Image 1 (cartoon, helix red, strand yellow):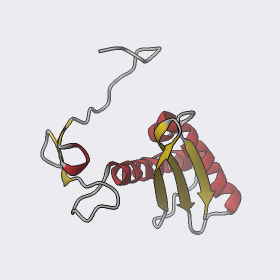
Image 2 (tube, rainbow, N blue to C red):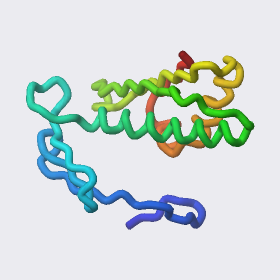
Image 3 (cartoon, rainbow, N blue to C red):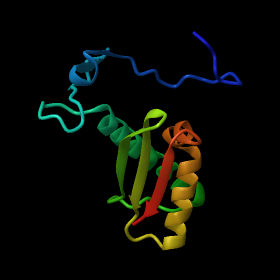
Image 4 (cartoon, one colour):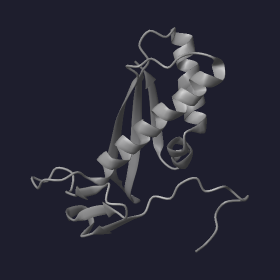
Length: 142
């Protein structure tokens, strides 16, 4: 294994999965809590695709990051907070790539406060960090 982290880190959790069959296969976690049939985007086969899984994971993580940001500035994250994620699978001259958009709804918060939460969350969310500089990302405050 090649270490890519510049400094030691404390591992809080490790997700372990096994996927067979690629986009037309099955993905399972070692603890049995995830067992998902996979299907290619646009196919008539049942199953979800990696882009959908990425979108759900990122939006859930982003809400968590906004919760931490809300605590840090002393506001309560609205119970009906939601994040709509759109992940595009693209094909260009350099092959396949992803792009994404997050549309954040923070009902009841003043716009400047909501904007601050989105900004802080995008700076700290592990998914946002992973995508930074790697794919085109759009953020929208609903």
